[in-house]
Amino acid sequence: MKINIYNTLTKKKEEFKPINEGKVCLYSCGPTVYYFAHIGNLRAYLFMDNLRRVLKYNGYELKHVMNITDVGHLVSDADEGEDKMMKAARLENKNPFAIADFYAQAFLKDMGKLNIDMPEIIARATEHIECMEEYVKQIIANGYTYETDNTIYFDTSKLDKYGILSNKEVDENDTESRIDVDPNKKHPNDFAVWIKAPENHLMKWDSFWGKCYPGWHLECSAMGHKYLGEEFDIHTGGVDHITVHHENEIAQGKGFCGKNPAHYWMHIEFLQVNGGKMSKSLGNLYTIEDLKQKGYEPLVYRMFNFSSHYRKKINFTFEAMDSAKTALNRLREGYLKHLQGTDDINNEVIENYKQKFLDAINDDLNMPVAMSIVWDVIKNPNKSKKLAELILKFDEVLGFELKDYKPQVSELPQEIKNLIEKRNTARANKDWAESDRIRDELINMGYTVKDSKECTIVVKS
Ligand code: AMP
Ligand code: ZN
Image (cartoon, rainbow, N blue to C red):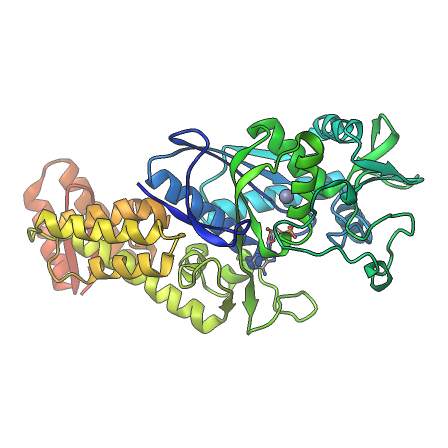
């Protein structure tokens, strides 16, 4: 089945052709674990999840690597400022390794809450220092670096062209405009690959150049190479990575073996809040826990993200979250109604919905259009188990875990819950008379009772 995806490298939608038939190797830039992931970061991983699910829906087997950065990411992406981990350790008065463990676990929990389909390999930078050292030694041996007193820099002037993703022109005079820039750097785009750790630096390793730590960009190149080889299919990340981090990954790939590591580069646009940036200082930075406290279960945020295409900015508002909450309830209820339905549906109708859904997701993951097909199915006046099955099939991409959805029993009064339990026992004992009696009692009390092979649903009429 043909999938078209937008490739930042060529700036156009292209037919996806994997290197090996039936299999997709991909790499996603993961989080820097110095604080809780905010919902903007999580949009990037929901996109990654969406891509995984669409590829699987099309029958591909995946080998997907995501890194967890727990060393070497300086406050700016371009080698300036303090290491983010060291800064967090200083502010929280903790060991940076403990900070990394805590926030890495918190991140994985958030992924779970959002029902993100996990990459096959999750690689932590601190567990791959030797691999990075081997990689950087090869770049050095190939003549793509130079040394200053405390840093080994990648020499971007050695490349035929630096900046092929962003079409960046090298401005040799640009150094003036940057604060903190190392005066020993030869060209503004050169970047650190191996750094001598100062005496008080806690995250450092013995290496061919003394006690050092790796440059941030190196980890993705080295781990991508370790698990996926010199060239793989798709690389993903946020749009902020286009101009520096991903240019530098490509540069390192060229320096290492003469190859751009990925055939397709996919980038997700930013989440904005009230039309602007999300930041701690503006008080508009939210985590999944913040949303839960405001009454939004994590899957509402998943639904919210389907309202926009991944290459468009999306504006976060609580009004939009309310709409997403309503939409999620409508989807669940609509699915249950079809599950209880007895109407017959023509197979042609089903195939037609299936085709339209597939066309939408294979058109560069067009989820707003895919969702419109889902709503058409939900709204179909004929209530049919076949349509419920179809929605479950679509849910392989949507990720709402509809098959496990049960209306919240806790919303029912205790008296009703007791009656349901009594009735379940009667049914288990095949005491149909008692079961029917309790059913009538529930109906008289204003509740609708629906039994199916899969479950019993009791709702207020
Ligand atoms: P970081 O932990 O800062 O390296 O960021 C993790 C991921 O989140 C990266 O892929 C960023 O591109 C992405 N990201 C950061 N802020 C946002 C945002 N507001 N909207 C969408 N993605 C974001
Ligand atoms: Zn990366």
